[in-house]
Image (cartoon, rainbow, N blue to C red):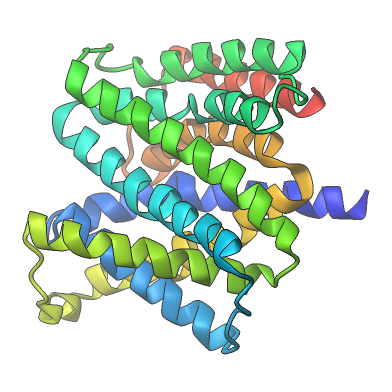
Length: 290
């Protein structure tokens, strides 16, 4: 039971940090390309995890390594690239709604991976519907939904890719290695896969931009907090609670994003936002009971 409590706490901490990262990303986007922010934050994350735990991960054979490669490709490289490219096509509110379908995809992926043994519970599906209704309310509070097929398909693909990452890490945590080493190894492959993207999108290795204290603070927050710490806490939660229950915490991201926008950027609060928040929290609680 203690482990479960720790698992929920780890998931809550992760989602809290991920919910406010959009502010840091917004600030950094004034001086950096999305792919530059990504690469820098994961390099910082990798180095931080190496500093904390300078041991090497024992080699467990090709099959195990293949899981790490796949996790790096999906959770680090593809997920963030798809999300960032989606943001260039469609509204951030659309992307926010569609990324929150990840828990549903995770349940489907888990169902497929267990060959039909892990059936998504009725409560989970009901919780998903409630949460999505709430997320829709929050996201359309100001601008309404404007559909852009390319952007929306990219955002849905990102959610599906994150579900694969969750199921892969669930398997990886059964190998019995230290969670920090696991996370660092996944980062390693994620960074490798990002290299071609850097080349394609035109990466400029100009570090003088970090003389700006706002840029430096925000990239360190993304690298140390949102990448190094949060991927460790997320992978720990997946290990303890399973992929499906941990992923349900993703529903809370829009609530935190809106709350931080209200507090930091002084955006107004509407009744629609509050109603959406209530529905999301109910949906999350139902999903955890399932």
